[in-house]
Image 1 (spheres, protein in one colour):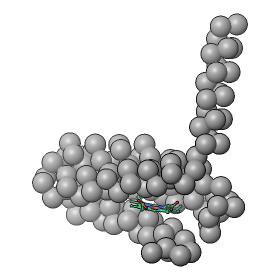
Image 2: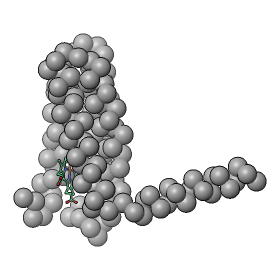
Image 3: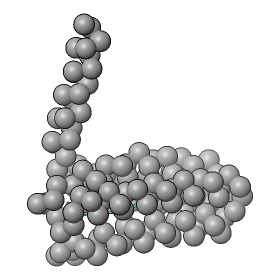
Image 4: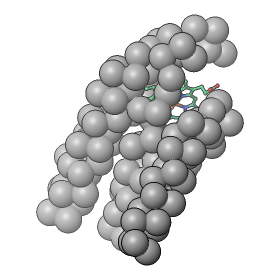
Length: 129
Ligand code: HEC
């Protein structure tokens, strides 16, 4: 019984969080992703794997939330957003693998692939200034 109540509680919190995702949350998440990308680049340039991996973890933590966008809100569909988010996750793993293998050029190439995903979506937003 106690377990049921706890899981119901967790579910409702989850539902609330989903519903409450708005423009403010998105801007906050976008800024967090920008910070994570900067961190990754810094780690690559300072030859510091720990910073790179921390940046990758931070990026992945936030990138999953991109897909919460409502269809009516934006000029792209949630399906498109999910696809972008999935690619960002995949390329983030690539950065991790390349970094651990000591392949900095490949890590930088994966970094650019992510940046291009960011740009692809931003290009779709009308009135972007
Ligand atoms: C699926 C779409 C999508 C993807 C992918 C995406 N963004 Fe965004 N981004 C947006 C939208 C929409 C806005 C505008 C936010 C708003 O005004 O609601 C934005 C705005 C921003 C901003 C400006 C935030 C501000 O303070 O106004 C930054 C920085 C940013 N994104 C970084 C990134 C980075 C870094 C990535 C890739 C890792 C990324 N974005 C990927 C949709 C996306």
